[in-house]
Length: 266
Ligand SMILES: C[S@@+](CC[C@H](N)C(=O)[O-])C[C@H]1O[C@@H](n2cnc3c(N)ncnc32)[C@H](O)[C@@H]1O
Image 1: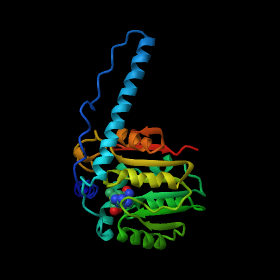
Image 2 (image 1 turned 120 degrees about the horizontal axis):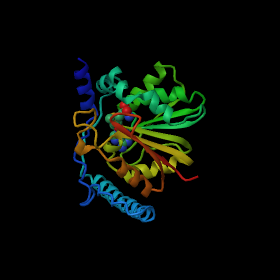
Image 3 (image 1 turned 60 degrees about the vertical axis):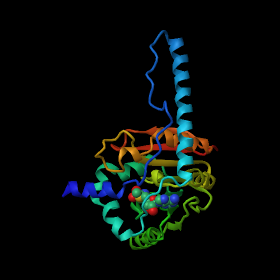
């Protein structure tokens, strides 16, 4: 039973097309031998610059590929069907939603966006974390947005507002303190335009956190197959190109997912 539910969640969170192969040479190169700390530092710094350049090129190729519509995926049109999977109690074992929300460092009066909010799995938790603030729940699918509105009303969460976005524009209000996107980055068809709008909606100093599946998670882990997952270094490089600062990446908190923390310069 448990395996069936996990398999169902895995299916629900499946991506839907091929992520482009990174440019040739993207694979990690072996670090040079240590020949003394000074030389080693210089070599290590060259190596970091080299990889940063590779990630930037791969991120550009990724965004370009998505923006040209090469990657088409299924849509999430029926919230009543998806809720059994997205809101399954078993999901908490690996998704650790309370730990994810805690990692955002929210204070009670903040304005937070849940990007690609689905059936509101994170929206309702965020709403409880900002009782004097507001949660803007965004999704592409009108039925998801309607579902979240009804869910928030049922759960007595008066600080949730919903926004139906477009593929290249999440249609967010300005003045966000934090924007969270969970298991959705790999679904965004127009990532450069979409995240350009997210950057503009963040306050100076605001935080964007992307949670998505590790490229090197086991093939049978929840989420899309490895070929469709987007490496966290590609996510960071892409968002850096849009003017956000890469603060840190956490690959330890969750077993199958990373958290990439990007800050809008203050
Ligand atoms: C795998 S679900 C994740 C839902 C939710 N974040 C969660 O963790 O349960 C992906 C969601 O992203 C939405 N989505 C896909 N492209 C989008 C876009 N361009 N803008 C907003 N939402 C989008 C889908 O409609 C779907 O509800």
